[in-house]
Length: 240
Image 1: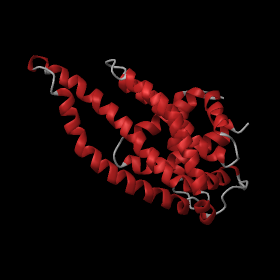
Image 2: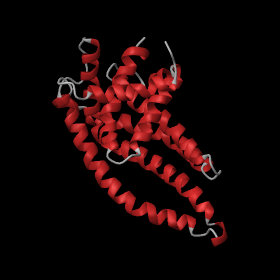
Image 3: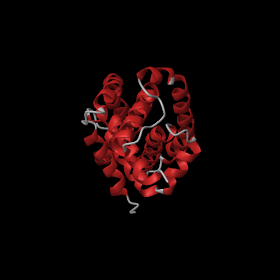
Image 4: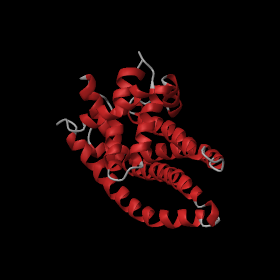
């Protein structure tokens, strides 16, 4: 079976197409509403500050180096978009985590035709919220040391955006693979090992999620699409 970036990215597009399936529609609504509220509020706030932030960062450049601004603007803009996209997605995932797990459960049942003994309904999803939040925080603490390292690398011209994209791709892949795998009581260490076993596919999947999460309006729907896409990846390649 091929292990490549394009194959991984295709899981996200396939997940997006499956969202319209009648058996999944009801389980998409709550995560979608949560994402819309969070992304709408945070994007409104962040965009009001990004321009001022970039102006402040570039104000120290002398007039005779103005041409550098045209180079730095896209680099800084891409970096800020990737960082804010990951932060916003993380906030949405912490709040909606049990409902995303329920969506992964129903998606796996649709894909395999076999029942998954996990949350079994919205009531169970609400009761599982404390455990889900703890698991999300564990992923966040795993991310922070790497984010600090990448922040240091960002001071090297040209490497910041690439480093943030690679980190975002890796984190998004294990972030979403955790939902179907946690439904089978697999540990976070096993999630990371599974992603490493199909590293290029996982990075292609997570990379497209990271890019979509940084695009306004597209990021509203990327979370449920990524949950279903990760479930497809789990069922077809990682559930060995």
